[in-house]
Image 1 (cartoon, rainbow, N blue to C red):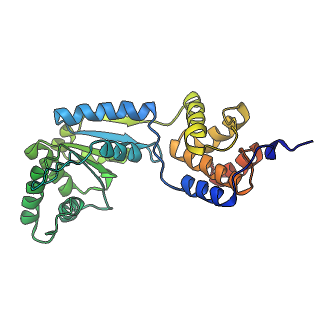
Image 2: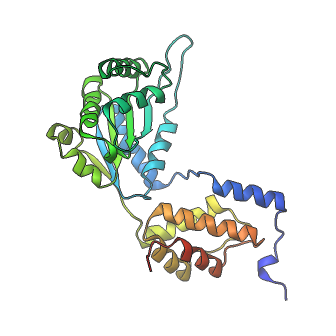
Length: 275
């Protein structure tokens, strides 16, 4: 009897290697949840309203924010500064005032990044205004110290830029240190973990649009979903990691679809459940 796992024509080694490289790269899939979030962000940008985006790690905050930045394309008229509608910046640990200003100048490719804080502040305000920046997304904003957070608040107030603080629940404690900061960033969007039905839907979307193996693996079946639910605990980032790793191993074994034993092996290695 023909082995059902080798009944289809498989790609050659070069093509398999290319597919593995594709699976190893950063992937963007515009999910309904992401589109809803982008609509919410767009309203904040147009109204110049500052806000927070809060959620646990691996729930999709970073890629959703950076994808929105990519949607808001930079334009430039010859002889004029570029129009940069949205900036995205990943905050380093213990972000100070000087590092905040130099980081923003570097982000906008401004060469003069040295000087005292008043000079740096003046340059940042000038460049943000010249480039007509409408929104700044500060990712990992729970890393910002109190003085730098006050400067971020002033950027929102003085330049009328929509500032978005993105972070974990620790961010809520950070902004509560200063009432003026707290009231500036009261509005919040919450990224949550996937429930059982959402996990099944995401698995199907990943199979079709991300994994793209020669045959359907049917990972929405009950046995596979029980494995994935236990391993991922609803974190979409962990689901992505497990499914892509399982697909890579499947390609390396020259099989057309992910089998339950392969998925089980990957789940054991990537599970968030500590044994």
